[in-house]
Image (cartoon, rainbow, N blue to C red; front, side, top):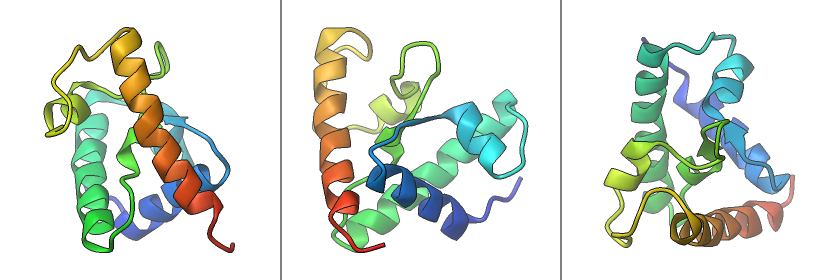
Length: 114
């Protein structure tokens, strides 16, 4: 399952510039795909690559903006990949950490000219 990484990256940059978080299903629908578990797993692999590209360019990560509809937190894969956080993946501690990460991305992309 191939996704256009440049297009997804642009969608996430636009969401950050607008201060929006998007669910996995919203992001898949934006590229004309229905939500299925295999598609979501493939999307997560692309999100990792988008964050790798951002890091190489000195930009903040964008995958933190992609969240579950149920609790508006990222899925397990995002948390497992963290090297700067070892707490719970749900609850107030997770929310506080995620808000910090998301604020960095939103501040960076909302300050850039359109």
